[in-house]
Image (cartoon, rainbow, N blue to C red; front, side, top):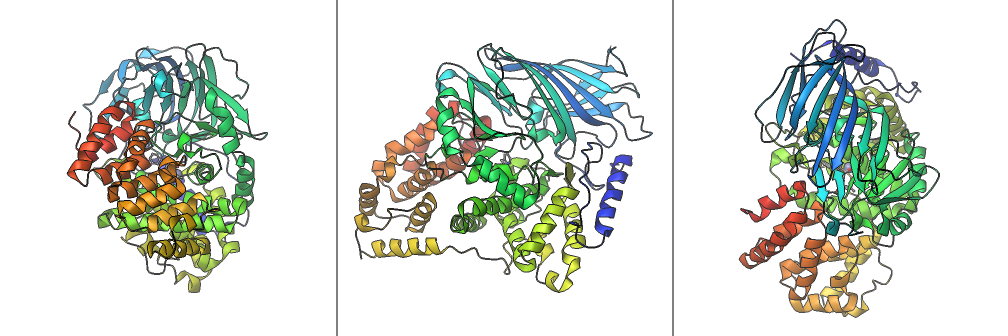
Length: 638
Ligand code: BES
Ligand code: ZN
């Protein structure tokens, strides 16, 4: 049974929320962070072995040596635990994957430690191994001495040639969804929030940064201390070590990157402060103190990761013209949706990402205008429709069923774009003013808590839908959340700018004008993407060559345009693009680009050979998460 006292408290608080009359925005004071009241009663996280309903981890004290030569972290995790009032549990269950546990000790109040019996279960393919520790019933701390393994799924160890500086190694973590357990033994569920401190020892010339209080003026001495005083879920614990430098953008925002990259990165993200202010005006104060972006080496498998106070970002967004900074707006938006109000389990992932995409476009609209935001929304809907057509019905559902699956499988455009469309419909039906007030109330009400889809729906009914049942009748909530496909009432984002692009493309396609006369002089990246997506696929190689000559697309330095052009080139058999294709696939490891490009390649037997030849070279440079994805696509057997 997973219904302890903690759950009962949470249930009361939620009931109070839904019983309250009128919109939540009638200023309820922000709650102070409380890691003990986390998720609702029904929360059962099937992707964690942890037993927080019996004993809950509330804080971690971490201490590591970063051993680059052996590719391991070695040290201790000291976990503070709490039992629900009256609870006397003596069994603490933690998540681990590929950890070598040397010893476990427990402590009652005070400094004395006694060895504690533990057992490590055989590993599950997705979930890793449960670590069960037997403690005295009044133990308040448990200390695990352990090392990670070189193949830890949440760590990537880079050799100097894989970095921009080429001289020093680099380490970074990626914990979402369930990879924190491969480098820290803990209750690896987003329903469990903890504070943490860390001490990290590195080679003397390198700098360590974490999702915590990074000091822009830190002394480079190989010994670093961190503290995160706000309770966060384990998937937001992050660490990077390398030859880093910092450049400020404003008083509270800046950029970390390898030294050769930092100046360009600071220029690219020069609008950070404007974005933070736009977000604060819309959704309430930024509650995490500093907001910095860490630009990682190119093998980072994602576009961005919203590690609190320190977003991790791919260098493939450094286009030179700020055209790909919607990624930063997205990760920043997670400071409200995701980091402040967190999905309690992975089937609730759409609460993180759908809200964030909606917020991201609102920020873009404020900072860059509605022309830009509309284009992004149209491109987002295209992505969704294209992917939806390939997904089984069960994966078209927002509140997705992940039973027996790796939560990384839920990573499709559905939680992102369908989630955002749902909120857009609520905005359209209730009007911006009311919807914005609702959103601010939602972030305030659930701040520093982890919630399920049901918690959201209850809150939505009480604080928006039930305030105007006539309007509520227009919003098929159950269909949006639990049914496949896109509801017929979904809004259709429109962009006049992109309509013009289509017309221009048509004229060229019909032979009414040559490529050199296409009025693309002032096209933004988004307009180019739309133009390329609308071309027939395949296109005759002669036509591809004409475009390439006019616009030098094979030489583009913009990763999104390159990706789109290469997809079309593969489908069209346009051979002059092959060298660029190989260069692109061997110089970065962002899964968003790798996945479609390898998928397009393996459609023909000749393409599959080319894919395998490239992959053989590139695979050792990709992140474990990207390797897992591409292995499946190309049928890798080593
Ligand atoms: N939190 C996600 C990244 C993530 C999701 C990592 C699930 C692991 C599991 C991040 O905020 C994100 O959505 N990144 C996107 C970019 C964004 C602009 C849509 C990405 O990396 O593609
Ligand atoms: Zn996101």
